[in-house]
Length: 406
Image (cartoon, rainbow, N blue to C red; front, top):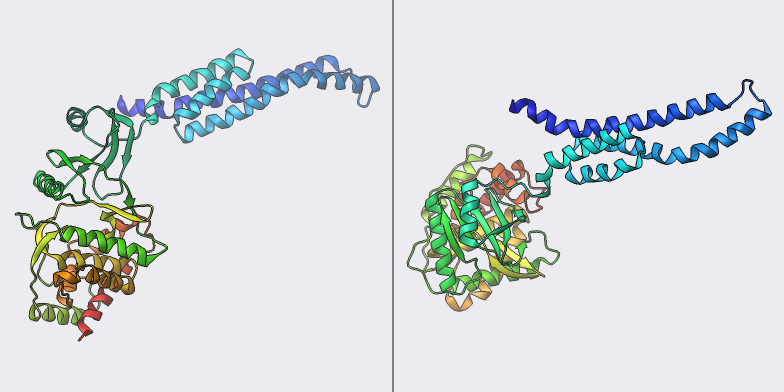
């Protein structure tokens, strides 16, 4: 029964509107034929016929209006069959009064009314959250305004919305209940330290509810130096915060030679360097997933950081390295080097040092994801030229640069 109901809901309204529009055109065409045949005397070119025909055209001016709208409604019916739009059904209902014949009026009005009933949900955004999660949101954050839901660019479900009190909130799905709880704890630590991070509200299974920060990810700046300076500045602010008790969530710390590697000897050489040049650094408060998509901007200024699931206590070099690899992939080595220079300048009073060990460690961390996932992740933010093959090529080139560096 459900399989039969879907075609009816999808196509019946449009078919009825189309039928009404076509009937209107046919009705007035036949009306014109009947009037012309009744009033015109036989004989081609007869002066009396010409005069009578002119009178008929004057009379037919009155039916030109509904005929044109009949054509418009027929086209609207085709559109409703193709795309099920609540707004188009409203237009069809209004225009049904212009056809001035009862059969077409009932066909068009009936189809439009069915469209209003069947497609009323298109007035609201599609929200792919379980009903019980929506009930939990309303209970914890206040009654949500459904029309305010906006899907955020993320690999997992994430929505921003507004509650009836006007507060802006984000609901985010994480990998697991443990990951949601871990990020909520990290956000509590950032709140205590007055860092530019959301405030955790509650968790429910893998879902995390938190306040929404002002701004949005901005990955294609016109002024790269100003952009990089803002990114380095907000990272330096994070690293100066009081150290938390919890350790940062670890990423892979062992050399990886990816199966897609073209120059395996280069990756093997990098692995030897990584083992031989192991570095250490003093722990600070780190973000743990510091990359451009997690930095929010408003009017050219960095306003906050999102994605705190890996935050905790660890070397500042972990954040710097992860951002450097991301910038290398998105914008190239010059931008990555500029970022490192600006961060060093911001952290010069803290004895910050950096070596290629941290870049290689960051590369191995990024290889948690396959190149296709990395490319699609930034595609959501407008980086459309970074293909899977290009990610592989740039990673391999970066590793070779590090291995050749003295």
